[in-house]
Length: 347
Image (cartoon, rainbow, N blue to C red; front, side):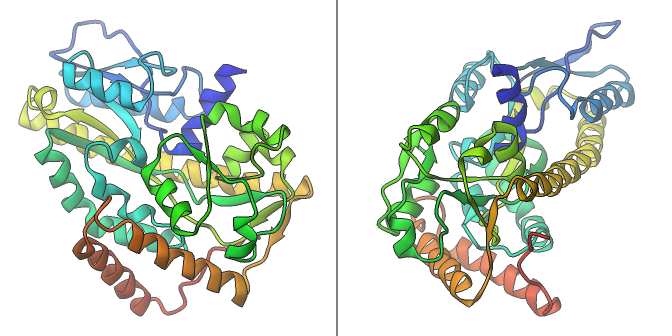
């Protein structure tokens, strides 16, 4: 059961950047020690193995990623500590983990900011250089970006207003600053739990509401404890593979260029796979009788109100007003070019 939980956690929290461990015939010039939650034998390993092999081949065995899978190096906080001590060189992080280095990365995690994947892709592409520069200033290199797909809110009762939400017991993962601030801004007191405690807590009614991707809800079997899912998606968390500049700079300039170029191709493939998994999981949810809280004028007004309160409350905690305005400007720019842009719907 533990292996299953770890496997599906990859797609739930955006940590789908693992590397399979392989033993090259000859020792690589630069061995990069990477920690990840992903176990060997996961459904994404075919793609990841191709990426690993391609990097080793194209760099003529200059670069080799050594993997520590299955969270054996600890959670994201532990991995960051070991990176700073030089025991590890990198890790696959969610935006929550990344924000321990660069808080500004959470600006595109604002709930209900984006209506569809096209908006997400456009705005994040505009911010990519800036975010990578911020990580660079902190001593890290972003090898590649991904996301996990849109998160919806699952509940035992339909969520149609802030008043309805305030009556619910909402789960929040650990000490996530963004999530805690969001709920507090709405006068909602969340219940902080580890991800492995959610199913039991749903059974005992310690919580009755949880944000999750459709794929994650199916994988964890949380959907068996819920009756409703919101049609409007809330957020599409980012994730990334980070390595220290110290180890990355040991690679030749030509090798560095090849690593980044190859990783970009495979990260895009991983992103497509994550999004497809969520789409396929929606059918499972509907077949199981999960009811959809439809997007109408009332629920859209609720979402817009929550977005405004959340993004304002996070100014100074995670990002500046200037950065927020920049993001909103890019979003407005996209919507002017695509006036048909609308909320992604559950088909």
